[in-house]
Image (cartoon, rainbow, N blue to C red; front, side, top):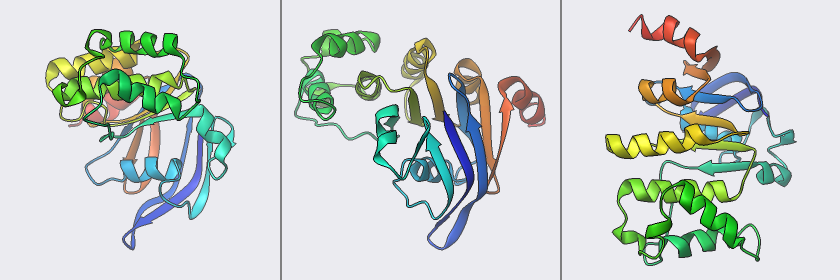
Length: 220
Protein backbone atom coordinates (compact mmCIF):
# COMPACT_ATOMS: atom_id res chain seq x y z
CA UNK A 1 0.00 0.00 0.00
CA UNK A 2 2.91 2.36 0.77
CA UNK A 3 6.17 1.93 -1.13
CA UNK A 4 9.10 4.32 -0.73
CA UNK A 5 12.17 3.72 -2.90
CA UNK A 6 15.54 5.44 -2.66
CA UNK A 7 14.11 8.69 -1.34
CA UNK A 8 16.59 11.39 -0.34
CA UNK A 9 15.60 14.79 0.97
CA UNK A 10 17.41 17.92 2.13
CA UNK A 11 16.18 20.69 4.39
CA UNK A 12 17.91 24.06 4.46
CA UNK A 13 20.88 22.56 2.56
CA UNK A 14 21.26 19.77 5.12
CA UNK A 15 20.53 16.23 3.98
CA UNK A 16 17.88 14.67 6.22
CA UNK A 17 16.92 11.48 4.35
CA UNK A 18 19.47 9.24 2.61
CA UNK A 19 18.14 6.69 0.11
CA UNK A 20 15.20 5.72 2.33
CA UNK A 21 13.40 2.48 1.44
CA UNK A 22 10.20 1.35 3.15
CA UNK A 23 7.27 -0.90 2.26
CA UNK A 24 4.11 -0.96 4.38
CA UNK A 25 1.73 -3.74 3.43
CA UNK A 26 -2.06 -3.57 3.38
CA UNK A 27 -3.65 -3.38 6.88
CA UNK A 28 -0.31 -2.98 8.67
CA UNK A 29 -0.14 -0.38 11.42
CA UNK A 30 3.36 0.99 11.27
CA UNK A 31 4.85 3.45 13.73
CA UNK A 32 7.36 5.93 12.34
CA UNK A 33 9.91 6.33 15.12
CA UNK A 34 13.08 8.37 15.53
CA UNK A 35 14.75 10.91 17.75
CA UNK A 36 13.64 14.54 17.61
CA UNK A 37 14.95 16.00 14.37
CA UNK A 38 15.49 12.58 12.77
CA UNK A 39 13.26 13.55 9.83
CA UNK A 40 9.88 11.92 10.58
CA UNK A 41 7.85 14.94 9.49
CA UNK A 42 10.18 15.51 6.54
CA UNK A 43 9.50 11.98 5.33
CA UNK A 44 5.74 12.38 5.72
CA UNK A 45 5.73 15.74 3.96
CA UNK A 46 7.79 14.28 1.12
CA UNK A 47 5.42 11.34 0.77
CA UNK A 48 2.44 13.70 0.54
CA UNK A 49 4.06 16.09 -1.91
CA UNK A 50 4.25 18.93 0.61
CA UNK A 51 7.99 18.89 -0.03
CA UNK A 52 9.16 18.34 -3.62
CA UNK A 53 10.49 14.85 -4.28
CA UNK A 54 14.00 15.35 -5.65
CA UNK A 55 15.21 11.77 -5.67
CA UNK A 56 13.49 8.39 -5.52
CA UNK A 57 9.82 7.42 -5.80
CA UNK A 58 6.75 7.14 -3.58
CA UNK A 59 3.71 4.94 -4.31
CA UNK A 60 0.55 5.35 -2.22
CA UNK A 61 -2.19 2.79 -2.78
CA UNK A 62 -0.58 1.85 -6.07
CA UNK A 63 -0.46 5.46 -7.29
CA UNK A 64 2.62 7.62 -7.77
CA UNK A 65 2.59 10.61 -5.43
CA UNK A 66 3.49 12.90 -8.33
CA UNK A 67 0.02 12.33 -9.77
CA UNK A 68 -3.24 13.55 -8.21
CA UNK A 69 -4.92 10.11 -8.20
CA UNK A 70 -3.22 9.05 -4.93
CA UNK A 71 -5.23 11.62 -2.94
CA UNK A 72 -8.39 9.49 -3.17
CA UNK A 73 -6.61 6.73 -1.26
CA UNK A 74 -4.94 8.70 1.56
CA UNK A 75 -6.12 10.69 4.58
CA UNK A 76 -3.62 12.76 6.56
CA UNK A 77 -3.93 14.22 10.05
CA UNK A 78 -1.06 16.67 10.75
CA UNK A 79 0.15 17.36 14.26
CA UNK A 80 -1.52 20.78 14.09
CA UNK A 81 -4.79 20.61 12.16
CA UNK A 82 -6.36 23.96 11.24
CA UNK A 83 -10.02 24.16 12.27
CA UNK A 84 -12.40 27.14 12.27
CA UNK A 85 -12.87 28.36 15.84
CA UNK A 86 -16.11 30.29 15.20
CA UNK A 87 -17.83 27.21 13.77
CA UNK A 88 -19.35 24.29 15.66
CA UNK A 89 -17.90 20.80 15.50
CA UNK A 90 -20.58 19.73 13.04
CA UNK A 91 -20.09 22.84 10.88
CA UNK A 92 -16.35 22.22 10.71
CA UNK A 93 -16.93 18.64 9.70
CA UNK A 94 -19.54 19.62 7.10
CA UNK A 95 -17.13 22.14 5.58
CA UNK A 96 -14.29 19.63 5.22
CA UNK A 97 -16.69 16.92 3.99
CA UNK A 98 -17.90 19.29 1.27
CA UNK A 99 -14.34 19.50 -0.09
CA UNK A 100 -14.68 15.85 -1.15
CA UNK A 101 -18.18 16.18 -2.60
CA UNK A 102 -20.82 18.90 -2.77
CA UNK A 103 -23.33 16.35 -1.45
CA UNK A 104 -22.38 15.72 2.19
CA UNK A 105 -23.26 12.26 3.49
CA UNK A 106 -25.13 13.11 6.69
CA UNK A 107 -25.30 9.52 7.88
CA UNK A 108 -21.56 9.02 7.49
CA UNK A 109 -20.84 12.34 9.20
CA UNK A 110 -23.00 11.35 12.17
CA UNK A 111 -21.37 7.92 12.27
CA UNK A 112 -17.85 9.37 12.46
CA UNK A 113 -18.79 11.90 15.13
CA UNK A 114 -20.24 9.00 17.14
CA UNK A 115 -17.00 7.03 16.68
CA UNK A 116 -14.99 9.86 18.26
CA UNK A 117 -17.62 10.53 20.97
CA UNK A 118 -18.41 14.06 19.77
CA UNK A 119 -21.99 13.67 18.57
CA UNK A 120 -23.40 15.22 21.74
CA UNK A 121 -20.95 18.13 21.43
CA UNK A 122 -21.57 18.73 17.73
CA UNK A 123 -23.42 22.04 18.27
CA UNK A 124 -20.67 23.59 20.44
CA UNK A 125 -18.38 26.15 18.85
CA UNK A 126 -14.98 24.53 18.87
CA UNK A 127 -13.28 27.32 20.79
CA UNK A 128 -15.06 25.62 23.72
CA UNK A 129 -13.49 22.24 22.90
CA UNK A 130 -10.57 20.82 24.87
CA UNK A 131 -7.38 19.89 23.00
CA UNK A 132 -8.43 16.24 23.11
CA UNK A 133 -11.83 17.07 21.62
CA UNK A 134 -10.18 19.08 18.84
CA UNK A 135 -7.88 16.16 18.05
CA UNK A 136 -10.84 13.77 17.98
CA UNK A 137 -12.69 16.12 15.64
CA UNK A 138 -9.67 16.10 13.32
CA UNK A 139 -9.78 12.30 13.38
CA UNK A 140 -13.51 12.29 12.60
CA UNK A 141 -12.96 14.55 9.59
CA UNK A 142 -10.15 12.31 8.37
CA UNK A 143 -12.24 9.16 8.88
CA UNK A 144 -15.14 10.68 6.94
CA UNK A 145 -13.11 10.33 3.75
CA UNK A 146 -12.90 6.55 4.37
CA UNK A 147 -9.47 6.27 2.75
CA UNK A 148 -7.52 3.02 2.58
CA UNK A 149 -4.35 4.67 3.90
CA UNK A 150 -4.21 6.82 7.04
CA UNK A 151 -1.15 8.91 7.90
CA UNK A 152 -0.95 10.43 11.38
CA UNK A 153 1.74 12.85 12.54
CA UNK A 154 2.04 12.70 16.35
CA UNK A 155 -1.74 12.24 16.88
CA UNK A 156 -1.51 12.37 20.70
CA UNK A 157 0.91 15.30 20.93
CA UNK A 158 0.17 17.55 23.90
CA UNK A 159 -2.74 15.47 25.20
CA UNK A 160 -3.25 14.42 28.80
CA UNK A 161 -3.30 10.66 29.59
CA UNK A 162 -7.08 10.40 29.20
CA UNK A 163 -7.02 12.25 25.88
CA UNK A 164 -4.20 10.04 24.62
CA UNK A 165 -6.09 6.90 25.59
CA UNK A 166 -9.21 8.11 23.75
CA UNK A 167 -7.25 8.71 20.54
CA UNK A 168 -5.46 5.36 20.79
CA UNK A 169 -8.74 3.49 21.28
CA UNK A 170 -10.12 5.09 18.12
CA UNK A 171 -7.02 4.17 16.12
CA UNK A 172 -7.10 0.65 17.54
CA UNK A 173 -10.74 0.25 16.48
CA UNK A 174 -10.01 0.96 12.81
CA UNK A 175 -10.16 -2.09 10.56
CA UNK A 176 -9.16 -2.61 6.92
CA UNK A 177 -6.87 0.42 7.09
CA UNK A 178 -3.17 0.79 6.43
CA UNK A 179 -1.75 3.19 9.01
CA UNK A 180 1.54 5.06 9.26
CA UNK A 181 1.78 6.90 12.58
CA UNK A 182 4.67 9.10 13.64
CA UNK A 183 5.12 8.85 17.39
CA UNK A 184 7.72 8.98 20.15
CA UNK A 185 5.58 7.32 22.84
CA UNK A 186 6.72 3.72 23.29
CA UNK A 187 3.61 2.69 25.21
CA UNK A 188 1.21 3.80 22.48
CA UNK A 189 3.33 2.20 19.77
CA UNK A 190 3.12 -1.13 21.59
CA UNK A 191 -0.62 -0.70 22.02
CA UNK A 192 -1.72 0.04 18.45
CA UNK A 193 1.07 -0.86 15.99
CA UNK A 194 2.11 -4.09 14.30
CA UNK A 195 5.42 -2.77 12.93
CA UNK A 196 7.96 -0.02 13.50
CA UNK A 197 9.87 1.97 10.88
CA UNK A 198 12.92 3.27 12.74
CA UNK A 199 14.48 6.38 11.25
CA UNK A 200 18.09 6.90 12.27
CA UNK A 201 20.92 8.78 10.54
CA UNK A 202 18.68 9.42 7.54
CA UNK A 203 17.92 5.72 6.88
CA UNK A 204 15.01 3.45 7.84
CA UNK A 205 14.92 -0.09 9.16
CA UNK A 206 11.59 -1.88 9.56
CA UNK A 207 10.81 -4.29 12.42
CA UNK A 208 7.89 -6.14 13.91
CA UNK A 209 6.82 -4.52 17.15
CA UNK A 210 8.18 -7.52 19.07
CA UNK A 211 11.61 -7.42 17.40
CA UNK A 212 11.86 -3.66 17.83
CA UNK A 213 11.13 -3.97 21.55
CA UNK A 214 13.78 -6.66 21.96
CA UNK A 215 16.45 -4.88 19.94
CA UNK A 216 16.03 -1.28 21.03
CA UNK A 217 13.92 -0.99 24.15
CA UNK A 218 15.77 -3.54 26.27
CA UNK A 219 19.05 -1.83 25.42
CA UNK A 220 17.74 1.56 26.59
